[in-house]
Length: 265
Image (cartoon, rainbow, N blue to C red; front, side, top):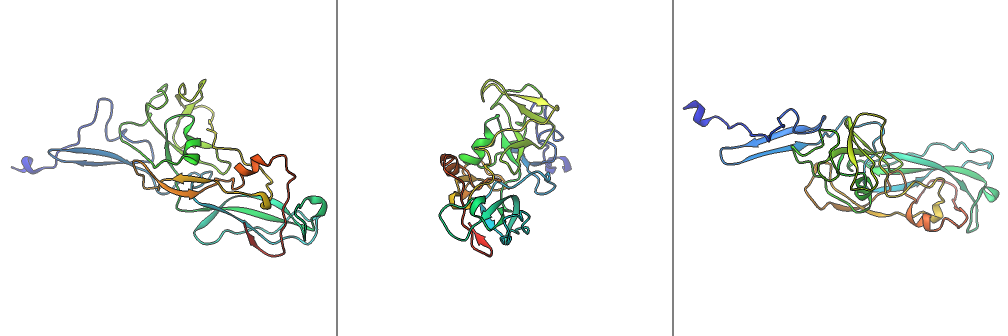
């Protein structure tokens, strides 16, 4: 009688088990009954790499200007509220004029890029192109069990690997397995170990970037808990608040006008 009422064991596909159904660092969650069997992967919520930054809403915050153009060592700018500092650069401060350069600056200030702490520190990547799509197109997290790339030489879009994003927008694998480049996004394959391969993000950080020309780009991001599809709309720069419009204006002289005191851009 006791065996009849005992909880049925989950059945794994060939080559898979509870110990390898999810990537290292993930938790394998079993929910198996007599008539149904569900196995899923739960992403970690702590212990992230010190290089990882959240894919989330970001903002720029400019600190106090120095009182001399020769003093390029301004005080550090802090992020406020539920945000963390993921990147920064130094920008000139000017009293007036539409264009601000070192030639007419009276001092310098640190501009911090602040990111919402509630963004994705880990997300699934199935090709060398999906660091970019995570930033630009927006995808909810999807961590299906028994589907991650546990073996080398697996092809693009046939499995997934957990990745994190660093401040410059490039992405790195959180496990030993990683995506290596092929001739295009479809021909990439998995590689076990070796030199760290960074996947490109949507665009490169332009630094220093003038606050007067800065612009945010609307991206999408799912929650850290993971959803199958969708996600929520947000503004994200991933270490690069000043991207796309800045690229279009690359021929325009860099300029910024900052008044004394702290400013938010």
